Image 1 (cartoon, one colour):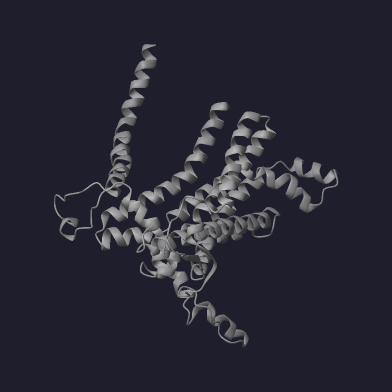
Image 2 (cartoon, one colour):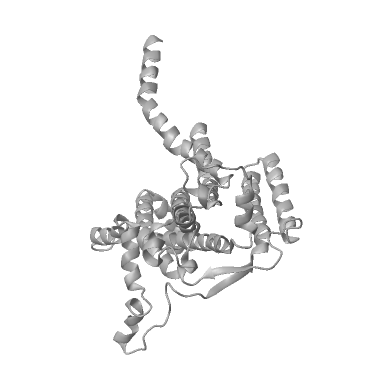
Length: 373
């Protein structure tokens, strides 16, 4: 018992410096940022850079202005840009990475060489990737000149400067759209609980999901973000940024998928072929289900990267181009150029909440699985 207590005390003392630094420089600063987001720091230019600024508590006013203020249209478009970027970035990285992994898993000649080539972009910093792709996507040069080598007219697509939008929607529909997405997730969870014979849990999730779906289909009564329609959509200028991001991270997902494919016993595939399964059916019913856990892990990592994306867009388009801007860039401009620290802190907390919505459920599920084992 004494030996156990001594070992435990030694372990605590060894971890204490790291825990103190973590508490101060991570959670302490997060707490300070949260506090600043509820103040008016920066609205008075005389107090913005004062040694001891006089801060007034304004509650949720900064957050309300971001989502419903007449002058905060850029933040709302940046948020829409971030959502579209995240979706296409994750889908593109996973799809291309899986395709490359399947090709390499088939035993092609020179596998080591191709594996190195595909993984090399991941070794680069986003700032380097952004600089190279900015040169390649210049509207007057770069890839737009490739058709000329085949005797065709030069391309005219304005990669990083296009102002055209597609898939436009009214910002006032955001509560209804969000409710619909959450309803689908809850109904999917309810279906999984029902298959595990957890009827009480399935019933609860189903009731909440159906209620949210009905509220969303009714147009979100009781919630009005703006007194007028505000059209938002996917800026085509983001296509170049998405291509660059997928090019860099697809090698990473390829490595994850290739390791998982090599870990699948060949006996399972042979058994499926003996039962008459075609090559496609082997992948659909045997390989892809076994890749589910690694796909979820890759989605979490890629989602975390995309929600915090900053340096790639800075290098490719700069911080002042609204068509490719994301909340992280706007946070920098507000806090460190405009000295509007409360607004910057509020944007930072919104990003933190979005990251938490991605990371926390995954960590909770993983820890619960470890406890069960």
